[in-house]
Amino acid sequence: MKDKGKKIFLAASIVLPFLLYCGYYYGMMIKNAPYKFSEFESLTLNYGTGDSLLNQFDSRSQHFQYVDKSGSVVTGKLKLTKDDLLYLHRKAADYGYWDFPSDMTSEVRNPSSPRYHIKFQYQRKTKEVYFDLDYNGNPRLKDAVRLLIETINKTMDEAVKRTETK
View 1 (cartoon, rainbow, N blue to C red):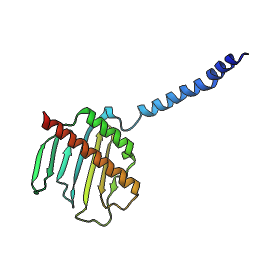
View 2: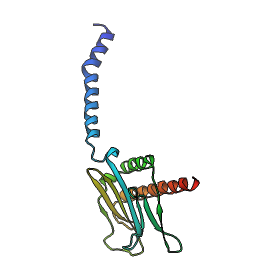
View 3: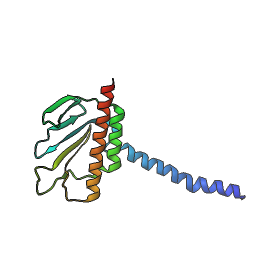
View 4: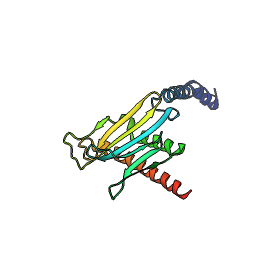
């Protein structure tokens, strides 16, 4: 057998079945993923100090409210585009949101420390995380949650700017 024939035989008997199996295996993993964007329903973000989470956003109802610098509550509507929601879904996956514990609050509650509640809701599953900025757990986990919160806030700010320019 010539060298070219040996290479073809090797590819056909070892490499090709391996590639087919990898495609099948990862295809099934993606198909059965618990958090798929095609099943995405809503994103909810609530935050505030103490036990009052006055700052709220719900992507389903497009309702948001926040407390401004003067202390008054401002309400309105904010529409995130499908691209914005897909971006946030992917960022949550990048930061490992699906593996976060649901309770990342401190045992000793500081009333002046900000508390966050993030909720991604899908057709089959819902993932909620409660987070305090003075959380004493894993620093990597704390940084990942802070980055996700910053990403959500940045995306919301960009959506506000888009609606103001229209």
